[in-house]
Image (cartoon, rainbow, N blue to C red):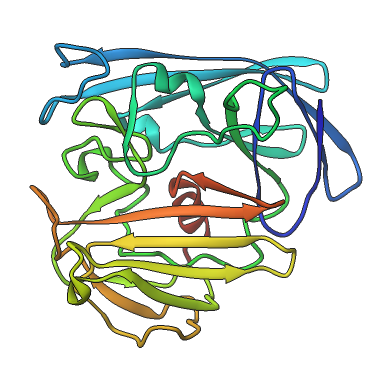
Length: 298
């Protein structure tokens, strides 16, 4: 099986099954072959008394990897989740940046009860019931999008800090209560912390609001890029919006004050990121956005 993609101004997100090949054409016309050979995941440390069953404030650190064959070269890409290594650099190879976002083997010991993050089911019954790896690819000569990305919130110096992800576990797919993959990225900061549009947005709105009886204020921003890709940005726990809904936003515009509604044990904002491309909605690590934010800082 071969999936063909061509480099474009925005990043390419794709989910693959074992033995499937992504044929990715760079800007210079060179085609790079990326075959998914194998995937695996394992628990590194845990305080759980029973694997796969959440316990209040339990902690789990796990690792996962994918074996790729890139233009005939065998490459293992490894990740660790729940430590500072959660905020990682993409693989740079053959003129490409490659982010290994997830493998489905994670869910042999993790639940998906704290937001969407699992790989999709396959449409064809000739394939396994779920895809095995989610990767993000971009020509290394390009940013992840054709605009500089403004900080979504005030950024810590140098990089994000795992200890500031709620109780230290709520990075992307981090083990909430030791066994539930977190479907977003939490960043601890005080009530009233400003949240800014990271990119120019076509529309923004609350899809849940305390004023309409929900337990939280949950915001969504939409951007349809000229290359046909749509980005969907989400943030939660805002006290209020500072800009009227259903309007376009310029990157850097403050749209809300964060960290003030149903925050649990630590005041924080929750961020998530999804890409709609080639007819599929793929949820991704918001760290990829923050990685570019740090690179785009003046």
